[in-house]
Image 1 (cartoon, one colour):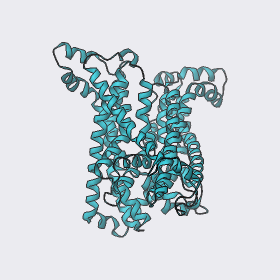
Image 2 (image 1 turned 135 degrees about the vertical axis):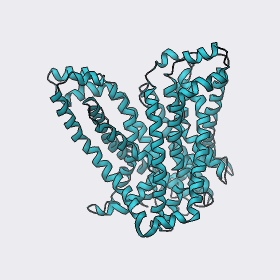
Image 3 (image 1 turned 90 degrees about the vertical axis):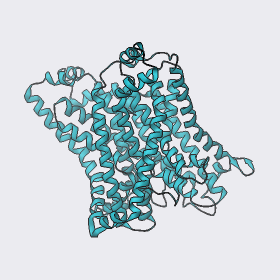
Length: 542
């Protein structure tokens, strides 16, 4: 369609359009340059000074951290892929009732705050450890595998598999020899993303690992906040950044192969009622869904149970500052602060994300090669740890007028940086699907570009925009990595308060933390159900 639309324009018109879209692309790039590239490059520069990187690289402790970080990420990725494949099959190939609920149940863990996920697993493993870290990270990312692999599986032709079965291949052999190779690019892409998320996991490791089990991410936080070893933290950030870039490159290669294989057949044509052995896969998917919901149910139960029986004491205590004044503000004040901060972050991310998506569509339809550069740049914040970005803010933002490190806008801007790539990924496919001929017809009738957008694009992408806003809001609401660096003591968000309560002794503090987690979870589940209701089919990975 893009080529058809482009073909209706004169060469001079295409050049003019390409120039205009390229100029517009400078705005999102300026946002990324100021609030992402500058802080990250400052961390790299800090790590290179005075032998900070060299001393960190030769230290045995660094490589122990690297080994544990990569090891737990690899184990978590394997578990997430094995658990996500049956769910992907059900979502992609089965025509049964309740698929909407399954899709929502799988999505809930992915958008839960990492601190909440860590606390949910502590209800089963109070002392933490390696196994709960691995399971919690996998729990967090099953949705990535189910959505990414399911997206390709839903369009993969069944005829090759049916031919293999007709030639005598068993169902497992047909899957291993025909289906799995076809899905390999999507599995590889999902595994790379999950590995990335697990390698940069912060809240889960902080809650379940304590002082015994640390990753590069938590070590950067501890060296900065507790030891004030900025050079060492910067060096570790550099090591982590190199690993992240390597994983991003592998993921991009897998993604490119996947996009080539997508133009096959529609899901409605391929989905059918399960038969014979496929019911075992459906059963396995049901077990996975129940396993995903178990920690959530355990957390709610824990928030209502005390030594003296069932009680709402934890919820009532949210109106206080905790046992012996643990908090600088009440739990309710922190919740209201979270709501305000997430709203500001979502507003910023929507403006930047939607504008970027519009520019990407315009660049591609005008034949501009700059689109690939902008698309990759917009995704980079997903690949760099939020802790590194937050650390970068601390060492750079004082150079802005008025020492921007003390600005109340800093936390929303950091959260917007995390949310913007997700909004782009949700809005971009829908914008691409809008028929270019509708825009050209409106323009031919005299409508200005702004009116074309308002009367052609906006009505068609409205549902997707609302869903993207809801998704971005819950992600911002639970953001913990960068916020833990940047939130001021008198204005913490709810995830920060939860982490503080859990680090202090006292039954009341524990009850408050679980109650706050339950409240966050209720808001998250509500948003996810709304998103699933508004979501446009095949409108992106998330």
